Length: 101
Image (cartoon, rainbow, N blue to C red):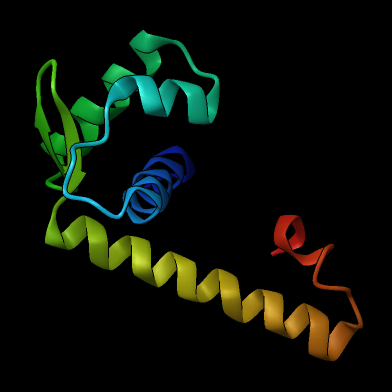
């Protein structure tokens, strides 16, 4: 999986968690999240669906599959471990670490 695919999986995961509902994530939400064009978002969602990382319903939206969710959770965990390392071992403040991690 390339960096762009990881970014989209993580974004869908974050948006799903913010919504705290079973609503599908719309392409409009992803367009706003990334400031990408509709075509770019649509192509990536189709690619993720082909790779079984999202379930996509045209004109409705998408949600992560179990495989997509596992990957997203793993990425979030690794990110948090890096944040903790930067704060505890390298002396960064919590406000600085998100971008570095």
